[in-house]
Length: 345
Image 1: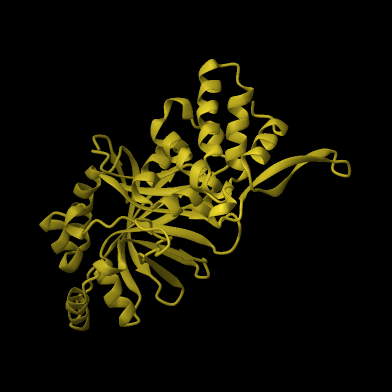
Image 2 (image 1 turned 30 degrees about the vertical axis):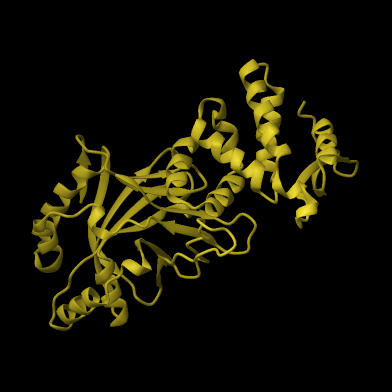
């Protein structure tokens, strides 16, 4: 069934910039992105909002998802879709196969070395045919609620979760499936080892979201370590961000320049782009960024740090091209030499 939304409230939407996905439900709720260095499949994090602070479905929809007819469910979903942004949505009833589906729930892991930060909430390698991302943290799953649905299912009821597919025709492998509602229902079915009847909402997207919009959403949701990983690996999109007029992302970049042990090529190329610009504002912006880089805490090896890791270009005759090589700097003097060699001043 296709439903066209023309007066949507835009409360529920998904951003995707060709690299990462971010689900918005009034505010950023979940984000996932691939690990470009290959140690894991994808990283994944969700907000710490409790269920009652997210979208609460109307009583009519909740009842129909548990005990309603197909017509009642579709009527409730049509009302529910007014929370989405304008566009065309495919809505279908179907089943999630238990045997070849994987449900990912984020678990916050404290980072003792960096108070106030969080490690990556979770990571997964997509072994299964289908991956579904919870929009609740593990600690928000109520065992009593799961048991309630298990008893309903044993009695013959078939409560249904709502799955939102954001499909990208330009990059189908990066399409995301988010659990909007029904986490406890899914837990009940999986513990009973049953296929899961569900309501599927899908939207085809023909274009990517602006990288800056996605990064703003991710910055609100992610801890410093998580955001730095996303930032430094989202290299193809960083050149399209207007840092000069983006205080939020510039402040995030300054934090990395000052505290990161490693500055990747993606950030170096952003600095080079501003150096090569004819704009005076771009040059002023770069000057301030280099001030933060000179204050990098890893340059001071006297405090037990091992130095700052960054990249330098070298022409390789065999390749007839410049190649980036990782090197370690241990002093401001070495950094200033690197800046002049890149060059950035």
